[in-house]
Each structure stands twice: as structure tokens, then as C-alpha cells.
Length: 401
Image (cartoon, rainbow, N blue to C red; front, side):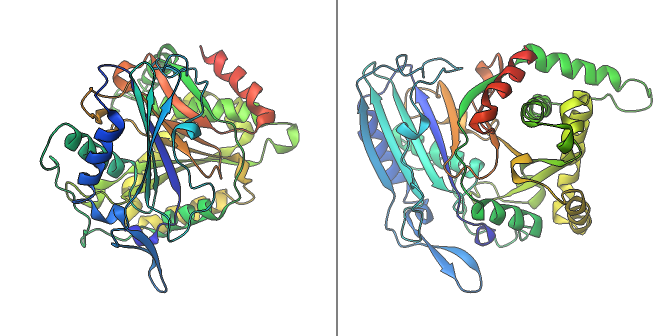
């Protein structure tokens, strides 16, 4: 399934502030080296096949690793709180491709930064052609296991999975479109939608679904409410006149479809689909948030049909509704909850927080990250508005509280 996906760098930052391990950079470097033995394709390079798109050549050329130190504490850097007020950028703690991604570049870049307080941060940048978020979580857990003295990973990695269906054309088209798009300098910020708001909307949604006593109880998730809220706040912040209220706006989000695709346990390639909801800017900005939640739930309900004949019909229907769409009016949301990133442990327990970043900011995006088990709200790295709309967007977020 990897060959159809284009190259797109992603980054994750893991912050560890409790019970620090001895010599974290050297410990993790050795563990990474050992993990690359069973996960040897990650140490390879991309090969652009003439008829099959991007392929991974298992060259054994290795990955990039940097050991760094910071003279400040995690608290000084604003990284010690589960909802950090970041004073140091994620880019400072991760290696980037700096726009120079080519077939000779490593498929994974890692930086371990040791802070004066004893805590440390692990920044990982990877090429999406190698794996998705679930696959990267599996790999990083293996690195953590080797750091803790394991002789082999607890999950045996599977790379070749001939029984998997091909990625449907809508996924290939959307991913290729993202990669070929122009980079934008959207400012990033760590945001939180309060749990009090999330729970209130979930309760209202449940009550509104009780009209038909024969129907199953209506329910929605924290993801549904968070995504609807961000979509609405962003639309209200960016809508500028009556002239563009009828313009289309799209919400795209990724869904892990390992179960639907029948992937084997341990497979760490890309196995995801896109959910897609479409409305007008005016409908999103001024409409009831419960209606937006329903749109998102409907989009999620279509995902199981991704690998069936119905995918073509859904794709054609959505293409018509997307006609005239401005790329800035697209919001992309991906959730890193429940992927296993919170379970990465190098010997000091799980991370205090996990943050995500997209190196190429080609569409407005939000990455749900942070630790779900410590949350008093749904946290995300927001890279979703131009600087001119940032103040209005954050003002709309504050109104949710």
C-alpha cells in the first residue's frame, strides 16, 4: 500500500519529565540502532519506480540521529505542563528536511535533547511513505523496549502484506494533492478545547437523539465535538464578507482502517482512509454545532465503504460538492489518540506530553495530541489559520469555555 503514497514529512515530539533515565541520548541511540534491525526498511531509501511510484529500497544506509542539550529546564521551555505554553518551537527540538527531501534522504530523523533539569525530549521526523501514525507508534515502542533491555520487540513487525487491498483512488488523489501543494507559513499553537464544553455538547447531542424512541441512543465522541468546534471557530474567524458565505468548505480527517482492510497484527505500513464532510462557510460559521457533529458522524459512517464499490459513488458525489473549493477553506484533522504514541517508554515511563507537527504546511491542519489519560480538555497542535486570522481564531476558541 505504500507505493501509492507520496513523500510527506511528519514530526512527533515526546517530552519526558519524570524519573529521567541515565544518558538518554546515548541510551536511545543504541536502542534505535537495534530496532532498525527488525525494522530494516526504515533504514532504506526511496526508489522512484517508473511504473509503481515510490518504493523503499532496503539499502541499509541508516537514519539521522542528533544528540543535543539545552541550558534551560523543561519548565523554562514551557514543556513541563500537560497543556504546555510553548516558548520553544517544535522545530527547535526536531530535525527537519528543510524542504530538501529527495530520494537520498533518510526516511527517519531523530533528535534527543537533554534539559538541565534531567528531563529530555525526543523529536522524530519521518517520511509518511514509510508508515502512518499507528506504524510509527509501534516502531517507537520497539525502540523504547530495546532501551529498557528487551532482546526483541514484543510485537513482531510485518512489512510485506500481500493480502491488503490497494489504496482507493480518493486517498491517492488527496495525498498527492497535499504533497504537490504550495507550502504556507501557518503559525502553530498548542490549543485545548475544555472538557466541560465537550461533555455539554455530547449531552445535548444525546438528548436531541431521543425523539425517536425506537432509534438507538444518539452518541458522539470527543473527537466529533472537538473537530466540529474547530471547524466552526475557524470558519467564523476566516469568513470575511457576505460574498463568500456560500463558498464550499471541506473537513478532511484520517481514519485508521487496519481492521477494515484486514491488516495483520504488527503491520506498520500505511493503512488509513480519509473521512470527508462538506458544507458552505456560512453553514459552518453560523449553524448549530450539533449539525456539524452530525456531518462528521455521517462522514465517519462512510469510511467502511472505502474498500468497496461504493467508494467511487461517494468520491463522485463529494467531487461535485467540492467544486470551486479554495484550498484555504479546507481543514485537515488527524488524531494521535489511541495509536500508542502515549505508550512509548524509554525507561522513565510514558511521556508527559506528545506534540505533532507537519513540516510542509500545505493545508490548514490540526493534530490531536497530548495525553488522553491526563486531559482536562482535548489538546491539539493547531496549524490552521494565516497570521492575519490567528487572533480572531483564538478569540473564538476562548468563547467555547
